[in-house]
Length: 323
Figure 1 (cartoon, helix red, strand yellow):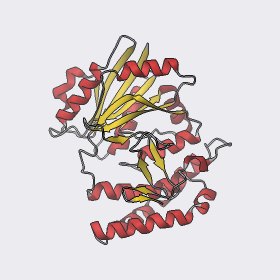
Figure 2: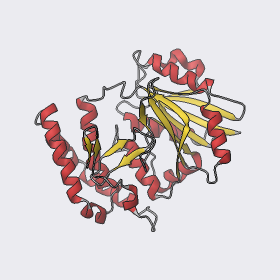
Figure 3: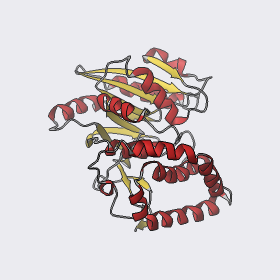
Figure 4: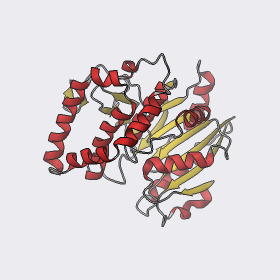
């Protein structure tokens, strides 16, 4: 018997409700005799409409306003990890849903695996198509990260749109660092930062093609909105400052500078002159917190960690090509 606690992060709006309902039903329909599934929805929406699907859930966790994706997941985890006995946590967006054989395939994979995965990465398709949304995340020496859109690309990180994490490892992370997802990041690339800390703490990442998920990517905010791009561009810098050892930053400074030059140019063309200065100002305002978190995190890394092994051999991969 495998016990799984499912955390669904939701905007809790009427707009999101049909997809949330589909997500919940997919979790319920995938249950089988060898799995015990607990379903929890977390939201920061004080006027949410999740009560309409309450009978399908174990509980609803309403977080303080402006908690962000990070705060919602952190609150849900800390409120449930000692309440619901589980072997694994499944973190999933409300705009994602799993195939009916997901839990049976998971059970088979875990039972037949030579080493038990701390982090299990599913194969995620865009909506109901066979266009790949992600199968792991590729990380570059510039600080840029990209969802792998083919099964052949070697990746080291994981996407939080749907991710399985061993409960015992989550408890280890909470003990080491005091948090699950990083409190400063709020929205976007929090999965990159978590993956880096997880790997630095000795996590065993597995990719499993038989765990199939579908995802309506960035349904809430829109793929290229100012909010999404601002959070993403800012967090690229913050993750470097929060997690990269000093010698790694020095060794890759030219790669970092190259990417930041592209970001400045892109933000000027598409969002005007104020996005990047706003990122710099916010970074300065939070500098003492960034340094405090950085010192604490790096002190917890394994002594034999080879940080360079996390990077792709490329500087950048985009729809225009590779460098």
